[in-house]
Length: 453
Ligand SMILES: [Zn+2]
Image 1 (cartoon, protein in one colour):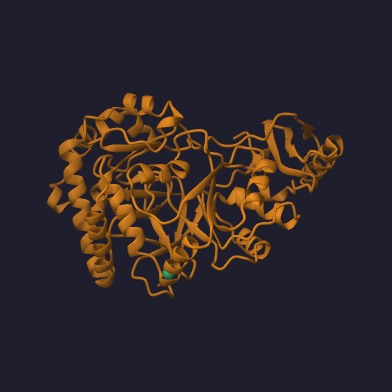
Image 2 (spheres, rainbow, N blue to C red):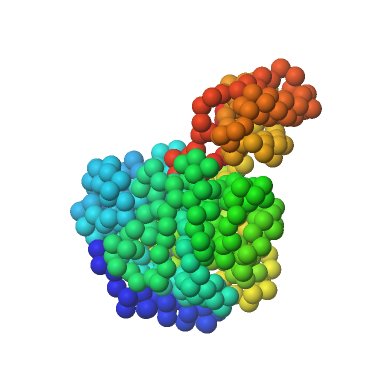
């Protein structure tokens, strides 16, 4: 796997040129890229060769002619999905068995896995051209403020990534891949695993004398914000970037207040392992699709388009730059709402809001409760979690401060949760204490409430 700076520059200049040409040039570029990808997939991916057997000729094909695809189907046929027969699923999985291989290419490719929160984890293959596209396009779509942001954090101290460390996830592995390929970047990253005890994370962060930036999940930012408010954490980052989960406006507001050292708005990077450069956030806080290289469709349960302004049931992703592992009208599971008006930033690219995955609502009998109904925070606990273990039984798990009185903390949290159930007419619900540690997703995300469904 060889990274080319020249080709990256090509993607950067091409990306700028397309944006200058407005809607007409963006749409022409998208159609050209789509037909190119479909041609490649038909020729070299046996899976797509069969799937597209009865479709019109590639040079007249439109997006709407193409059937949708799912992670389950593609993963089940992985070795016929790729357009290159030299990499098999067995090889990729074997490579990922050792954490020493994180961010280490296997032949011409880098491989990562998704967290598998929505079923079986997918194995994602990234080639050098895809990587060049990610870097080139990210640069091309940066605003002036974001350029200043990037330059500022290069000169302001440590950059910390707090994310899942128990698998080949792109959050922790991407920077290692960059180092392995000797892709020049002025800043160095320090990695902290999201799985370790919060106490330990707070201690490590407090020890850093000058902090430039933190990159993490919104669920981790929630915890850090609380630790900072309570005075246990006392850091002064210049910038914070979140990714991997829905970033609620309330959290943005609370974190901006807790960290007055921030010199930039918290950056919300919407991407996924399947496509890191899926969208870019502008200075108005909207997400814009890089439509020359990525197609995002807001659709209903039957994969039919929903009107702009309507919240979709899911989204279909097409990654026009990944010729090795074609993602074409791939069901992403995220819920989007496209704006009906042009963005005040003046970008010609369409903008949308992300609602994330369907909130993990709690269902007991015929009552549905939002996780937000529960106040699980306790000042003597750093992580509190409620897990539904059967229809009407819940357990509370907590990571407590060393000097906390466990009986007291659990009693108060259990009482607070029980009151919510009673208030909603659920008198038969039992909430009890568990001594197990809070449970994180495979990629280190923390969900305060985990429901049975
Ligand atoms: Zn905008």
